[in-house]
Image (cartoon, rainbow, N blue to C red):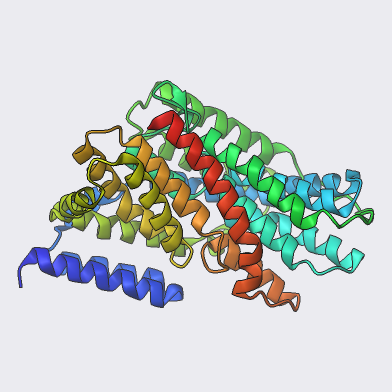
Length: 422
């Protein structure tokens, strides 16, 4: 068997196993990456070069900064202020969803759900109502806004790495409004869907005792990091190293602050760090890199281009639909990592700006996960928290909120991207 065929067999087998055994995804991807190297499909040097260390640095660094931001109790304090100042439960829930989205644009989605969930569940207990719909709304709002900025979620980081887009490029790119504005338009339209779902909750929210803020310093650290990430666009034009280094430096600053200023142990920050996703990202980079090295990306791109023909709109719609369907049931990180180079290849074959298809991929992959309880990590966490409270969430129950939300947000964001970038 030739190396090229063996490479494809290992890749496809790994992806099928990741879909079937989600909890073992990291182990499966590591074994597959090692097999690629041992069988000669990819040299060790090629494997190292296929890893986007800049993206990895952003992901790891932001997790540590997010940790101390969560521990500062500032997000919980803001959530409780919103609840106490809302005129009824309906608007309290909607404002909590907006806050979830705002936080999620700068912090990983799972962290956002963990920050907001206790406050939301507390309100549900005091008012004696079922929190399932509210928790679903919080999770899908987080997933939507995670696509708005470079640091919001791993798919955005992957897009930035492949397209050499820095933090500022998510707002304006090549002189045009970028993905941030598409996501925000989607958020406005999908907010109307959430309003229709919760509009009948007219009871007054009970007063919640305000969470005591431990320190505003982590908020300042996060704010300064975001500002500096925006400024890197004027220095690291190719988005090759600076953002990752900056995030890792601020992770170190965060840990030093906690150890020397707050005088608390940082062992738990490492103990509960998301090592699983970090290692998974490394292995996925290697798997996708093997396809590029062995020419499979070009072959797949050519085949899809043949199906699309010269109809760019058809290609745009198919990419979004394909992304939504797959991301509703499988992890959007490996899917997006595999499809980004394919989208660039299709664009080259059609001789068009690749940004159109890249944004289509990000929209579909980020929003498709909102349809099912297993489509995104934030959904799984939200359902897990509900299960601890004695509530089981069915696929149907989740889809009743997630599907209309996804349709509304996707249509609005896609129309925006098409008219700006087609």
